[in-house]
Length: 255
Image (cartoon, rainbow, N blue to C red; front, side, top):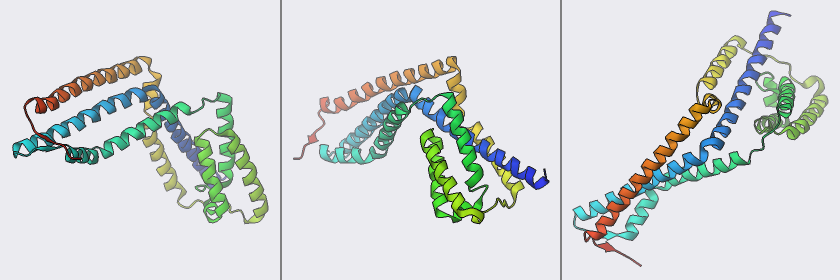
């Protein structure tokens, strides 16, 4: 095997390793959300409720300080605008929880077959191995579908995509570009750095929390304690808001 062939082989290995860790990171994130998502969402929901009440208190106090009546409609408009981003984040968390719960668990045999098919296709048209793929629109589009199916663990789609790709490659014949990787040494270094970053940061790092039953139980306990604290704080803030009415603050209601 020539030095050039060795370099290409190592480059392909690093590409597949990078893609594998990316996929695993996505799977660890989904499992993290399935395990802790509901509790994390409950904590965040209480947190933004406290933020909302603090903003309401601030709005009321400012009006009282300058001797104005509290305009409920104006306050509601202000609070709605202030809380828009928080509520968007909450909706996203709820949707992510549902999406992760709906993911079907697949067997190891299926996972292995998905990996084999992905590697076969990648050797043929992976844009980092075959830059010419990007010059062939139909292959470029199919590659996007391949990566999407791979991350969704969709075996049937990968099998069907491989058939389509093989058919197109046969029609292209000698026009299919051969691998020609410029600056392959630099690209391998970049891949090694990317791999290190993936496995040393979240969501890949969730792996160690999920695989440690004691650590997972401790984390769940911390979230439950945090939820209790926010619930307690929320009640205190509600009491403060009620005190404005009890203390004789004037509210202006508009139809």
